[in-house]
Amino acid sequence: MSSDLDRVVEKVLEMKTIAVVGLSKDPAKPSHDVAKFMQGHGYRIVPINPTVDEVLGEKSYPSLLKLPDELKREIEAVDIFRRAEDVPPIVAEAVRLHSEAGRPKAVWMQLGIVNEEAARAATESGMDVVMDRCMKIELNRRLSR
Image (cartoon, rainbow, N blue to C red; front, side, top):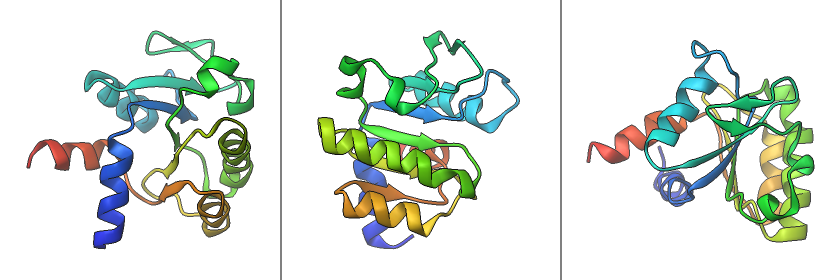
C-alpha cells in the first residue's frame, strides 16, 4: 500500500459507526464475517440491505437514504459489499448524505471492488475513499502491530 492509502485506511478505521451495504444474514458470507468481526471490536454496525429486517442484532435499512435522520448524522463510513457496477448509486446516496449532514466521511469498497467513477465522486465531495481492501484484514493488521 502507498503511504497515502495507509493514512486513509488508518483514518477510516478510527471511524466507529459504519453502514454496511449488502450485509448478509448468512454467516458464511464475507459481509457477515467482516461486520461481525468489526462489531466484536467495538464498531457500531448499521446494516443496509432491503431484503432483511435485522442482522447481527441491528435493524436493517433498505438504503442509506432510508436511514432515520438521527442515524444519518451518526454514520461515519460506508462499507460496500456489492458488485463494482452496483457501487455508483450507493456512493451517490453517500455523497447526498455527506452534503446534507456532513456524514459519512468515508466510503470503503471491500476487497475485489473497484469503481473509479464512484471513487472520484466520493473524493470530489470531500470524502475519503478506500477501494479493493478488506476492513477486517486492515483492522487485524493494525491490531497485530
